[in-house]
Length: 116
Image (cartoon, rainbow, N blue to C red; front, side, top):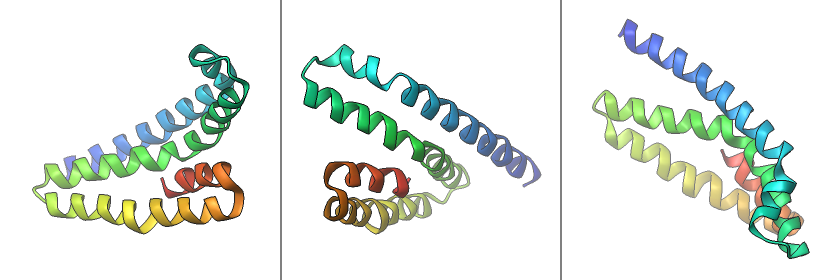
């Protein structure tokens, strides 16, 4: 169990660092990345918003994915499934819905980020 605790600690640190690094990178290059895919101004604006808002939640997303893998590794796949189902139906969908009601598409993006 000591090795498992050590692995979880190390993985959690990696999730935090990688999540922060990914978010900073995507936010910094949101405009150029959006323009790679389209030149339509509205689409570029939406993509920039998405790449500037949603990655903020990546630390939590990566952590939850890791915890799901841990549960599977220790022979508790039902618990991993429960975490993912609870996240989807208890967090993502309600927060996206509330975000849509409050602030349209940007609110939906905030709901995604917060749910992670």
